[in-house]
Amino acid sequence: MTAVVLAALLLGQLAFLGGSAVVSGRHGTAAGESFGSAAALGERLYQNYMIPFQMVGILLLVAIVGAVAITRRHGRGLEGHMGGKEPS
Amino acid sequence: MSVPVEYYQVLSGILFAIGVMGVLFRRNLLVIFMSVELMLNAANISLVAFSRSLSSVDGQVIVFFVLAVAAAEVAVGLAIIIDLFRKESTVDVNHVSLLRG
Image (cartoon, rainbow over the protein chains, first blue to last red):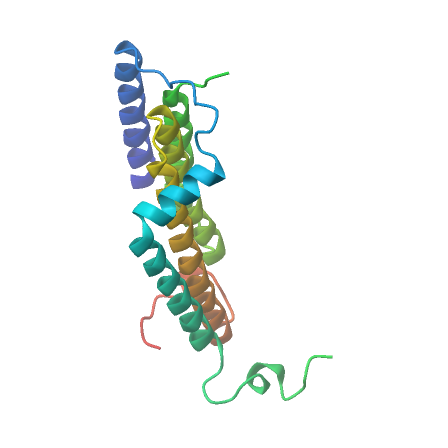
C-alpha cells in the first residue's frame, strides 16, 4: 500500500511539473544535424570526462573480479558444483 | 517530429513507478533486479530527453556512466543471487531473511 501511495505521489508531482512546463511554453528544440552524433559524444567523453571514464573502467574491472570471486566456490574451482564431472 | 520533453518525463516517471512497485511488491529476487534496472533506465530516458531539449551532449555522456554502473551492479548482483541459490535453493526473498552467511 505504501508503494501505491508513493507511486501516486510521484506521478502527481510529475503531472504538476509537466503542466507548469507546458504553461511556461518550454518545448523541446529541434535537434541539430550533428547533435548527439557518435563523434560529438566521443569528443565530449574523452575531453571533458576523461577521469570519470577511467574510473568507470576501474569500477567495471573491480565488479567483474568481485563477481567471479563471489561466484566461484572457495578453493575448489569448477568441481564444487559440477559434482566432480566436467561439462561435456 | 519533435516530441516535447514533458512526454518523455511522463514516460520516465511511469517506468520509474513501475520499477518502484516491482521492487516493493514482487518476491522474486530476479524480478526485483529487473525492476531496479527499469528504474535506472527511466532515469536514462529523462537524461537523454533533457539533453536533447537543452542541446547539450553532457546528459548523454552521463547516460554512458549510468549504464556502466548498472552493468557493474548487475554483475555483482547476479553473482550474489547465484551464491544465494546455491545456499538456499530459492530466490524468493521471503525465505531469505538472514544476514548470516
